[in-house]
Image (cartoon, rainbow, N blue to C red):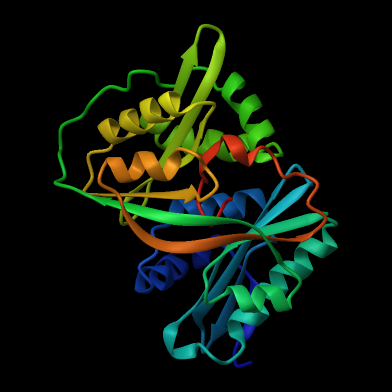
Length: 281
């Protein structure tokens, strides 16, 4: 492998953003900051000639489950083993941290590599994209989340572990996308969202029934005024694909959720319509 690996710092964020922009990814500098805030020693860069040419990142949830994301290498440096080295660096870090399970969302191109490194499939995900005429008109959410406690408790059950710190950070940045569906005292669903560099992204999107899921989706679409919307839906969901296609979303790409280690925190994927995103789970 050509290049050197080292721990990523805040000074590398601008270079990392430029790198992911060349690949057309949707993440922002704020997302990179979330990785560094959660695991200051858990994100890595490959450097050549003083230039960042690749990255990988990790985030650990409650010391029970870790996520690997942001594995990218500059196009002109691919095929040299840099991506594999960055991924292995992330794995080694998480093994040293004694996290029992690590997960990632794999593209079809990346899946064979991940399998060689001990990852096995958990379930399939599909990215769907909506393109529409953008609007600059601002709307008020019908059911914004003013108190996150109940929603965060439900998310622990659905996701499998506590990721409340990350969801609070996302809510602080984009409070208009934090939505809840509630019938009486029972929370029947919730959704979060982020403003990405290319599109607004819906996720996680969770509901106990299709009507609650539709309510949350329509509220999100009303809140977002941008031209493009992304949502990464579980193929096993009984309602997610049905609802997004009915609203004009088109299929974009497949992903496979994979894990390495002992999957002690599978959560309740039957309630999950869409994930937070491939970088965070």
